[in-house]
Length: 368
Ligand code: G6P
Image 1: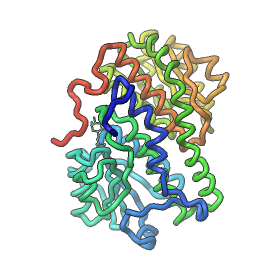
Image 2 (image 1 turned 90 degrees about the vertical axis):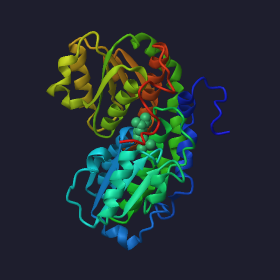
Image 3 (image 1 turned 45 degrees about the horizontal axis):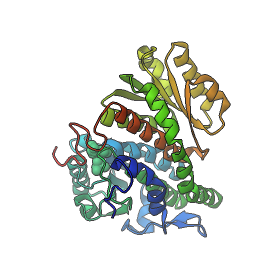
Image 4 (image 1 turned 90 degrees about the horizontal axis):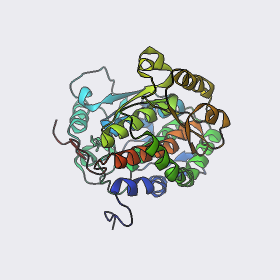
């Protein structure tokens, strides 16, 4: 059944390896090649209503909030919709100006997070169409939302979220495509996004092949107590998520930062005992991220890099490289999340931590 461990030693590892399938599930029936758009049934808003939306607010906690950050970049790039990502715990007590053309999405794996639920109720009370991007069917948020999209990732048992994150990012990509095609996004651009999305399950399959290599790297680095995670643009939220994974299950202090911000603080922490994980696949500003990497090396900081297969320049500078398949920039969070999930998993194992049930954390935080 879905909650059988099968041959896996832990749910977390099983769920990481399920991702080619869960992403495929998230996409199933939701791609329309003919019209070069996404098919999204459950928003419960007419095309006319959706076209009048001029702002999006995404609200969530934890890993789901990180998925929201990727969503912000996607919605702004594809749909040109100004997007705000709010911690639900903050939004519920704030009163930011939001017009009735603001569309709200609560992003949540469990559908039961107390702060996310409260923020959603608050937005509904004020009259905004409030939708959910949710995994658990029949959950409180799933039921109370005006509509939304389910992840179809199946039960996630490991406390640290893995497959739900990549499904959330996948669904947000579909949403950005859909809202984009009602606005500025061209037919060829839509076609291209669809083609790339269709390839994702096999790209994730390929990314998972790094597992043995990641285990080796983990053995080399598990002794360190402080880490930096650095990435830019679409990979900035990935840096935050990588750091969160390490914190959650290894109890190692880790900070995610936009790579270029490191000169405003984090670089002061760099020394031989503080590894930096750079998420540095090919992209328009890759040379800039590479120069950040060189700055860390110049200060004797160990560097682990996540890079595209065959990237010799990154390999020359970094101490250790984990390769991921080359995909378009907006899909890099999906492939780059994989090695970071695996890194936290292997480091946690080596440090004797309870991977599936880390101390002090709950799978779903149903109290404030
Ligand atoms: C808890 C879990 C995290 C999760 C967060 C939000 O902190 O340990 O893995 O990201 O809640 O949960 P949700 O179910 O709302 O996505």
